Length: 245
Image (cartoon, rainbow, N blue to C red):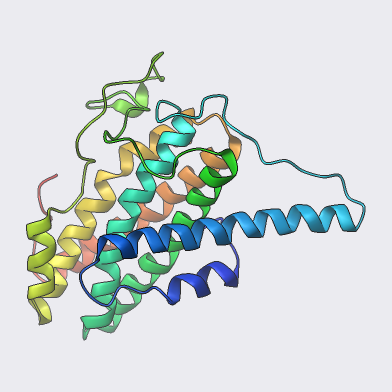
């Protein structure tokens, strides 16, 4: 489900697991760790090729290195989007008594943490900013069917919030709940979160300049669509319905 393979990334992330409400500095520590680990893995592979006489490969770099670039903007915004999913999944993994939800939460936490590492590693190698500059989705057309519209010159005005993101109050409610109520709320919030990111994933899969970025976005879309279908099934079993998008 992830294009980042490497025990170093996973090990680094396990050391900064979220066991409660995420503090601002813990998010930056995670970003720094995963970006450094992903960049190091790529650079080590490059160096190994030189040592054994293989042609040296240089990571492709987008022609535009601002948030207007599909590649850069997607990597920045999806890092932020994924970080909230990791926070919710880690809380659920550590507090649920349901083995199926514990496994689902673990899968989401581990996969999306590795993907953050890859996205942040690319940004570091490109020399681009790790975070967006105050507005999200400037790299894509805004509105229904956005993934069907090619990037416009100069980008778009962007949005103050990305689709599917939980509010601070919703995150507090999740942490304050327990038992079946917590499980249901987790499924509802995570399903809305997954489906909220679909437009961004589809857009990047079609319009990113770099092939590796398109491939990763496509893989994310496939995996999250399958997880969304599973979460809908689990909600139905509980007699619960998804939250409105």
